Length: 285
Image 1 (spheres, helix red, strand yellow):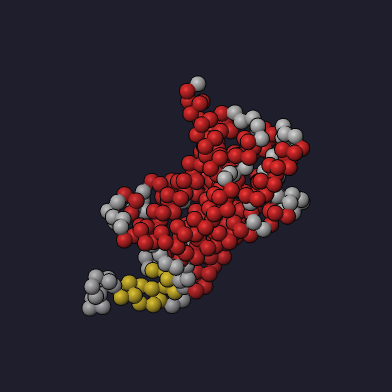
Image 2: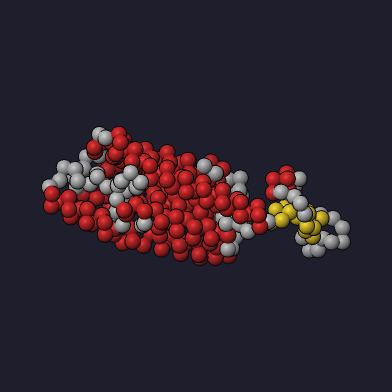
């Protein structure tokens, strides 16, 4: 009983915070500021910290599978919320299709970024000994005719035009989590029934959001790479704006899944309450 009370209090507070108009309207600006000024944290953090090692378990377990973790928790929450309200498999699949669209966009951009790096890059062989080494920094000798895979397999360095895929993924996941979980606050305010499984999934989504923000700060502070990280963050924000602030606003149809909460926020309410809630949700978006 006590744990259930704690769960209800925590999820109610989180839902109210994520559904707040100020948060909804300014979260992308906050994330942009973090990406822009986060590298300045490298002046104060210690390079001997455990987070300064790429082998840290948070990077290995969560960052490398960031999209998978996001799909598991957000997909479960979206499906359970939509299906428990409408009992419609087609409606639940339509809401889940937003994750498929975002995943396809992420994979497509990753392929394009990899192609960009391959076409604009060159292979360099470091000279680790001899008079060419100055101040501990080896001289790099250009090796022509090498592909990226062959270059890295031979233990050499590949230098090309890069965009940070990690920062791109984290920014996209943060914005996606904020959008998909923000509907829970209006749903609760309308008197929607929410059992422990739904609240636990929502809480996991909130924790995952803060974990992605923490990992984003760690990358910017301990592994600053300008301007590749800035470009990655910009690409993530543009992807979110194109989907949630652009395409999804067209409304549900055969070519558009619609915004989060569409067709869900008019349950167990009067027509006036439905209209007010929808207008409030639209204003937040």
